[in-house]
Length: 144
Image 1 (tube, rainbow, N blue to C red):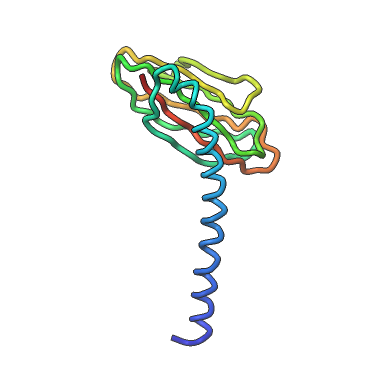
Image 2 (image 1 turned 180 degrees about the vertical axis):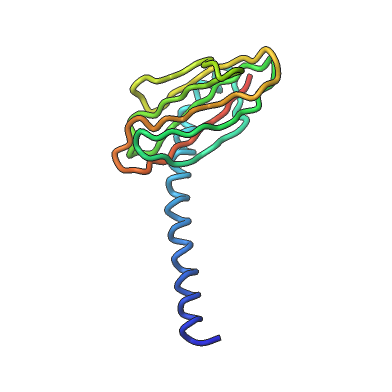
């Protein structure tokens, strides 16, 4: 291997960990916020079953598909990083009918659903106010 190629490869290897550290920092921040915000849910008998994370630009949205079981009460909590002051949630059931939403001006929305039958639900995450795009978010799925 030529010296120039070895230098290029080494430079690429050094750049990747810095990017991974930056992503890890935001992921750690939203995961810590989920843990903090979920204390009330745990006091009410809910247990965390899954977490999701991602990032969105201001005014952008994306959806997750959640496979939910009949007879289980679910709460879905979202949080966002320090550059975000408002994130919203909407959850849709069969025929894309909205089941619940939390579109208040806050950064810790919660939606609830108790399916009558096993089904897939669509959770829409909306980055309502992000001062430095993209903003990272985390979603916790809780069941009781």
